[in-house]
Length: 233
Picture: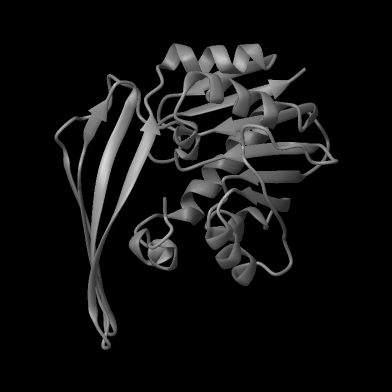
């Protein structure tokens, strides 16, 4: 996923208010974190949109499986250490006061087993009293099959139209995202398939329980998708 659209990612999601989201995230972290430090690992960091504002309060590092996303993140944040790792099995030689996994990136794990593995991997990188914050993908009840989605970019030298219809296959959400991209040189069309795991609220809570985290749930979260906050004790 994002192999062809990585360069367009920040433009397509320019509507996203990273500054406002990060301000709320910081408030939640301060409510639940009991460790004294400020070291933060952003898992599935993508191009580093949240990191821009996380750096105001934290010493930040990033992790992602996509080399294309990491290349863009490193270009934006040359002062930040980034790791190319799979969120389900990564092992770094340090612990953090905060680990985040935002913008529903947890859905990329696709299966319940990999959800448990990912939460466990993130939790084992927490200091005592540190917090794990995960923004979920919609649950099976929340997911709207047949919903038509559209994003548009209208810049002087770049026009983008992206369309997708929400489908489901078993416990996966499936969207074939059609991109029509126009530049002064050419117009191109390509399709990327986005498959995400549809996990229930109870399955998220169980993953946090298995990772031995004291967990609370914020139903609104950063952008209406909810937020799970687990503290290592």
